[in-house]
Length: 224
Image 1 (cartoon, one colour):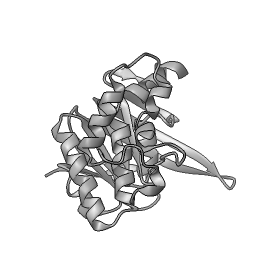
Image 2 (cartoon, rainbow, N blue to C red):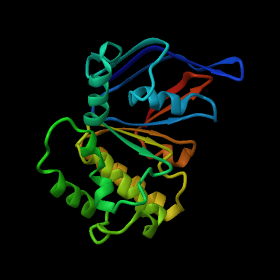
Image 3 (cartoon, one colour):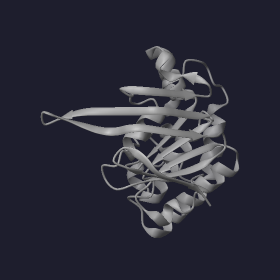
């Protein structure tokens, strides 16, 4: 599903060039669950942004389902990002003025085609993540764990083949973190590809495959 070849990404910071990714080669098959670890500054989040088509590499090639992402125009890239990829972030990114149900339905605003089944699917997803009785609540009325579960439901609304999660348990207590990880296990068991970025080695150990970055390169890649 994912094929990265010699991926490089550089940033200009304070008059200097920082090499966030320095030649990453990585292949991830459909249906895999991969945890990406590494110290702060190792390139984890940059890698996830490249995988999610939120950022473009300066060099190298990224093929997603056999398609060279660099060859896509902005509209096609946006469509891939919206339809093929779901995102879960540490800070949830829920809109406070909207209900939980409305937040889960947000991806429809960016979809380029009608999806008459989305409303029912959103309700089903919220039931699945244990929020069936919170549809009309605002995010401020939820716990951190509930907000993250709502964010996962939103990421799954358009049935993406690839779910990217950036430190999804970073702001959660241990019980809520365990609930979220169990949900990611369930998503993976359903056949979706999951890539999880985390600094927590116990969290990473939940994934059947761990990739460790160091100085913008893959230092370790192993399956359990």
